[in-house]
Image: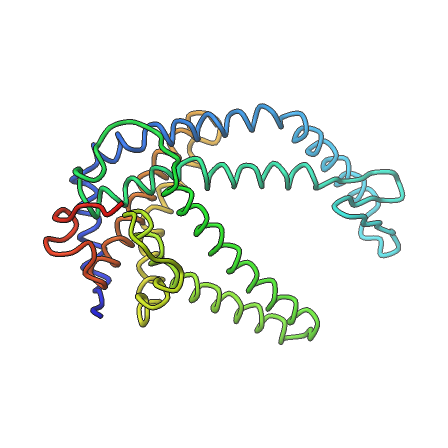
Length: 291
């Protein structure tokens, strides 16, 4: 099995993306348009809960500011609710629920674009015609299943190491947490290669991805980090500049996010292609999908 060069894959993937920006925009317009609508709807539906939480937080902070750093203040914690003797309380449940729904929307709603773009970048327009649409079929469901499975595995590793560190305590807790982060990232990188064949409709699974990514984990992590950093700065700048106009800011930030997603999946797809030789002779535009 071959390997890939980080610089070569990064530069080739960006060149491909910028040459195909129109195709990327056409494939992304419906999924990310739906995502904008979903986030607006979530914000509207939860505005009352968030306003109440912010008011409770302000009252909570005012009370603590008036009493000062009093070590004798008894704080009652029941589930996700923190209460003070004064009657002030904070319920983090609705906030966590809103955040969870938002994360799921960000993960699931644009997923058909990621699958379509991977297919287009690896197989060409004969496999993925460039037209607006939204398809959530068996291929997308498999992609989502692997996404959630890999994320759950990484979260379980972090929780396990954090729990062990918490039991041991002291400096070992931080070491265990760092070790858990490193192991979770390494395993996640080893399983990246489950996504390109899934998008192409090829047989395979996590076992195949584990085998095909042998010796590539560090390179995949570095490649992901480089692509992320390239698009992180403009996203943060947009967020700061457009903080006063949240709707416009959301639309523009999601537009940048669409380009960032396309860049990341192009890079990972090309890394898979360079490593495995799939989709075959002629490279990304010379093979037909196997569905």
